Image (cartoon, rainbow, N blue to C red; front, side):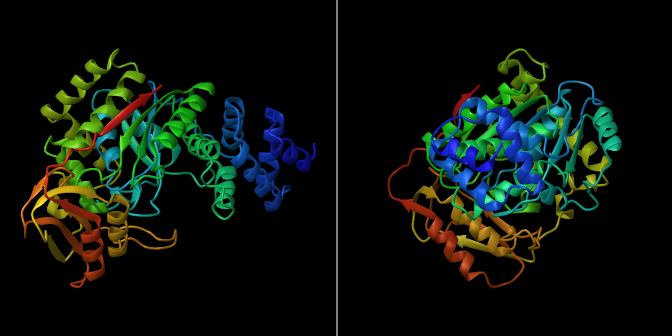
Length: 433
């Protein structure tokens, strides 16, 4: 096989075979296929797309380019949950202990964040003593014993995807649904789950801002998962405003604790129940979503979900007393209120801009090498559709410095207030799969 011939084949709109795709991915990972040829292939895929079979073959080729996690030593059906990202997305911290509390094993690999706030690992590390560096045998033992453990992502997981993603980022081929879908699904499949629940965000604060593109991506990922033998469903959820109220690492941990107590934001609780119910059904612990939801609601009301979270934290070295004493979490020295400049109803909250404001405070990373301030962030006081009086606080800035004028301006630019009542946006648009 010659790489140039395969580029020409895809350029002309013809499908590549499994063997051809494996040849390309293996060669690129090994360095025998140069960047300029893979760039040409990526652009050909960008314009001509891929068939369902090509997407599945590309995903598996990237899975097999590195380490594949074996979770067979863990009893039960392992269901993973993945979000395509957003602002204030704290669902993993709620869903993981929640579904574990009803007997669904959660063996999850999570990464650090790049963007608005930290990833799940960063958020958990805002809890004193918590660590994710666990050997595989200990990881399996923790899940078998407690039903839950979260570790950091292996450095050798899908190296082909890491290399190809970096190339796409500098060749204007990031926005290719086949390449996005295979990138996401390769990491989920390599992580060893038996089934996958995808939370695919749409709207201002999401990677996919248009509903038509979001549906295409969700359907593509579900098809890939099912084709390679993983039961997969996708929930399309709203990201036209931040999820919950907190944006920032320790702040989001506190909000997750409140949600596990049944006292958190309504949207975060509802989305967590929806995602968790699908996980419970896929794991075979309930036959229907209504039954699964009732199990999860009872676990919150009885306090079992919160106890599972404490057990999880303690097992990985974390100070579980933060659950009952959240003041032990990192706290910013300065709290700056953002008063409304007029009365009315909140008509829009630009999620992406709010995320940028949080990142400017130090809650997120602009580059992979940047450090994070785990204490800082923003806590919103209103959601779209809420009434607000002039002078009433619409947000509180948690800052490491007394001066936060740039962040204050960004928040004012992000929150629109109009005279008439505003319809609240839906939280969940569709379930695919």
